[in-house]
Each structure stands twice: as C-alpha cells, then as structure tokens.
View 1 (cartoon, rainbow, N blue to C red):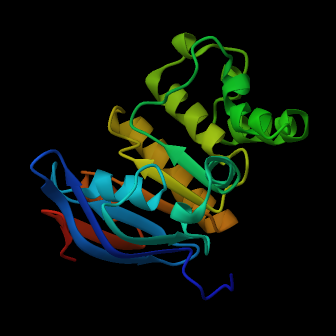
View 2: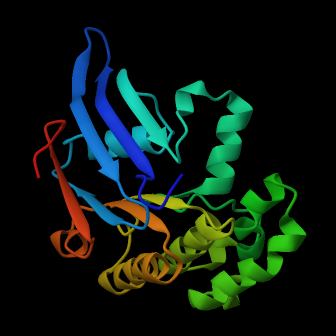
Length: 224
C-alpha cells in the first residue's frame, strides 16, 4: 500500500436486520485516507455505529465491499481476520471492557499476550500509561479506577500493538467534560505525532468539529 492509497475504502455498503428485512444502511461509499482524523456523526439511530462496525471488520455488510489495509476481510479465514484486528486495528468503545481480574498493565498487554509479545511490549505499555496520565493504575484493577482512568487504560490497550488505524465508538459517551477532553486530546496526539488513522463516532458537535473531516450519517446515508 502506497502513501496515496486510502487505508480504507467502502463501496455500496448496505445492511438489513430482521424479518422482513429492515434496511439500516443504503449503499454507502466511503474512503478514509491514511493519517486521517475522521469524525462520524449523526442522530441516534442514523446507522453510524452500524457503519463503523462494518468498516472495522466487527460486522459484515448485507451487500457491498470493504477493503481495509488493502485487504478484503471477507476473503480472510477466522485466524487471519483475528490477526489483522489484533496487529493492525485498535478498538475503543463507550464502555471500557477491561477484564476485572487483571491489573491495568495486564489489561493493556492483552493484545500483546495473544501475539506472544507480552515481554517485548511491556516497556511500551508502561510508556502509554505514563503518557496518558494513568501510570498509577498499572497495578490497580479496573474496580479501583475512576471512569476516566478506565477509559484511558482501554485506549492504551488499543494502542499497545501500534495499530495502523483506531476505531472508536462514542469513546467519551460515559465521561464528564474534563475526561472527554483528555480522551479527545489523546486521539489528536496519536494522530498528529504518530500518524495513526483515527475514525471516531460522537454525538457531541464540538468533538465532531475537532476531526479533520466530519462525515454526517442520516437515515443510513451519508449526507455531508
């Protein structure tokens, strides 16, 4: 993949649910350039989360084609798809999904453990915790952390394998304004300093405006 090649292309993406089929996405086309900071926004029920899950390989379109990192996820077997996600894609959700029995550092290192790189990535994991202001959470379990701390540890986990692209679904949805600002600043920083592509969903117009590009989804279609 050259620098000019989009890191992500989606063509003719549709999605239906239920019987009889209810359409949620209607023939969406989307390109994401390498190094973009892209905000997906729209009203609740507009289809933006469904779109994010499809372009991030977590769900399948009913029809259409996705190419991510010059690979069609539909052509991969389960093992290859898991490896693509673990090594090249970071995921951040509204809920942190930290494992309650593990410490902050152990949670951050989970993707590295799956690749048998836990020891090699430990220094980087600690560096991420330090950078995000949660080094003191390295030996704490999630139940001993605040909501903002849990989310920052979750972001560190998403970044420990140094992914090419990060997908974030309402990453500030459960946070107060101070912690929302911290999380958004982290995304801006990794995008600016490391060139990590970031695609994030937000309802907040102020946070959406901080993307270098904003895509508005309405009734399953991109309108702006």
